[in-house]
Length: 448
Image 1 (cartoon, rainbow, N blue to C red):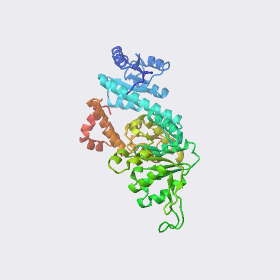
Image 2 (cartoon, helix red, strand yellow):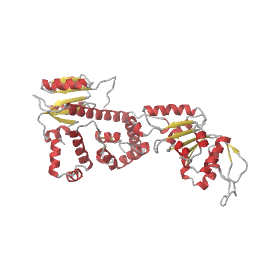
Image 3 (cartoon, rainbow, N blue to C red):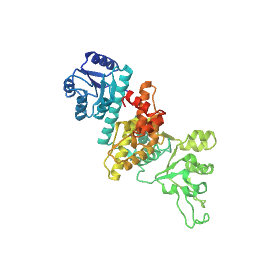
Image 4 (spheres, rainbow, N blue to C red):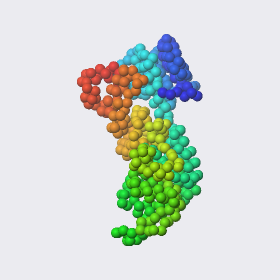
């Protein structure tokens, strides 16, 4: 987990054993955390009421009030504080009870430094997810023309939109499917002086080759069989405004020649006419392919490429905009809850973690569809791991990191499979390739 340079995370360690307090404080301070200590629950509560704390690490058994009472107190009074439990008396019953009342993790003494650091990082990471999600749900951000994002990549896009909107230059927008290329094109158009003029989107891949010319440039009555009246094309419809040519890599060689003529001469010929028509149209093209590769292969005209590539904008995929994922979740959840007349759902910490770590190959379009489905299908106010699409849960099962111990990876895998099967131990054992007795041993060993 990346720690802020301006603010250290504050951790309160509670244990009646001075040696344990000193050891944990020294190790965590060495990692850059601000650490406070308390020898009793009473002292811990006094500290909590005076100082904002991000994480409480508490022993289970102490004289007087114990760790469970402290966990319950924190959960009831400090929603923005995470809790972990450590104990030398580890039992499944104790772990279950601790987790039930709100402990994020449960470490059995003696634990290694790596186990401690990993548990602390997991707890603080989930706290950060929850805080961010809550912030966005309480204070939804407003962005121009449907674009949503606060990441550095999106702020760069916003700046480019403003600069581009001030010109009438041709624009080429590139980016993977679902990244929002049309939204960027609309933002350019509606941020320009021509915003009151038409914006006409055209899906080039959806127009048959033999109809391309008549659809874009229109035709005169009698120009071909079935042309019973004259009809304007997309270019005439967008005169004075903007025409958005999506998937421009899909147009045929003959259509490329005609489009090149439009860019060069600023005029079109209707099918069946020998008289050119002057047009005043800004062309914004978009592609999810590498057009330069198409040029090298001879599939796209080099002169046309340079004509449309006056201003280039590249929309980053969602996997390069990790900071925007939670914002998009909140945005779409609020949007669809309002449309459906449902209460705004909440997401469990584990579900948020899986959603944030998922790579989103379909980008913003995919996250919109997933959240739409979750809001429609959810029967509870809290969306949990079991509600997520199976593909996302399976991807999470294979997403182990290289900074974890073998014991941690094993525990996480068992926990994930158990969650995937919704607690079905027989099915969990089958997937893991073990019998139920061995599974019970794993559950006990890892305090699951």
